[in-house]
Length: 232
Image 1 (tube, rainbow, N blue to C red):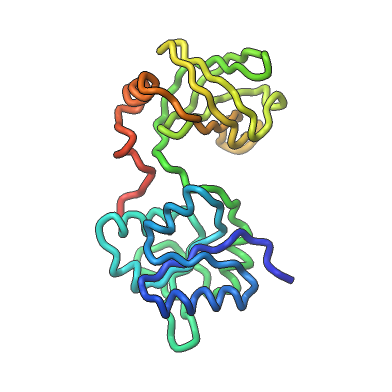
Image 2 (cartoon, rainbow, N blue to C red):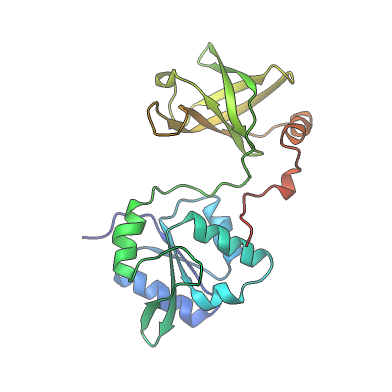
């Protein structure tokens, strides 16, 4: 029975190795998306959902600069299996100081990847900021407050979650700045999840130059230099 997984990202700088990894995944009835660089994989993960990352260890070691930072970010976001290819075999290889990984491809797919909730990579860093909000939704206005904000969206704490559905288009008014932003509900966190506030995760639609200046003043960053990446 085929695995019920989203595709697995496969990254290697070497064509033959990348092809071998894809072939091995396909033989395990898992879909693979081949990438020649980590930055290519990042661009895909910002738009689509994947269940894991299968990567050639020598490629991680050889990566430099932005590629190294992105490789580190992806490996900390997705279930990751680092491997070397030896003939027709792939052998899991752990890096010193890296997180524990599965001992073989089967465990990686059936345990780690199956347990991972697929989601797109976050484009921008979250900044913990509490702002008063007024949500306009289906001719109803609801008061709330933000838990965090980024260039891509914000999370608003709310207890009346039954009023919302993923995909709803809403309008947010920020009284402190006299600013209105349109957004889409991307996820809903229900009440009772341990150490998580209930509320709605929003993705901003396009906004004008004045709103861009307001977000820059709130986050104290510029959009082009605020990517959500870890330090390598």
